[in-house]
Image (cartoon, rainbow, N blue to C red; front, top):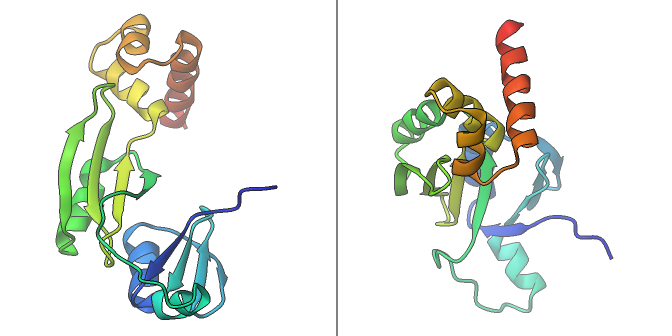
Length: 160
C-alpha cells in the first residue's frame, strides 16, 4: 500500500484554487474540475461532489483538528501578503519552543494552514543571531551535522 496525499473538501473550487495558487504559491499538478491536485501532493475537492462520493454524509469545517503545513523562509513577507488578503489568523508569527517561526491561519473553508520557516533556514537565522553550531543544535533539537549542512546550504545561496 502506498500513501498518496491528503484531500480536503472545499465549498468553492475556484476560490480555493486561487487561494492556494496565488496566495501560497502552489503549482497545480492535475486539474480534474471538481478535484485539483497541487505539486506538493495535496488535493482540494469540491465539497458537493465529494459529499456525493461518501453517500451524502455530513462534512464539518472549522474543527481545528487538521492543518496543512508549508515552509517559506520569509515569514514576515508572507504574513504581509496574508493580511492584505484579509485572511483570518489562528495566530500571527510566533516562535515555537524549538525557535522556528510559524504562522497559522484559515483557508476559505476554515482549514488551518501553517507556514513555518524551514529548519535549515532556522539554523541559518540563529547563526546570524550569534548562536554557535552547538547552541543551534541544542535549541532546535537537531543534530550537529544537520546544523552544519544547513549553514553550508544557506551560505552557498548567499555567495551565488
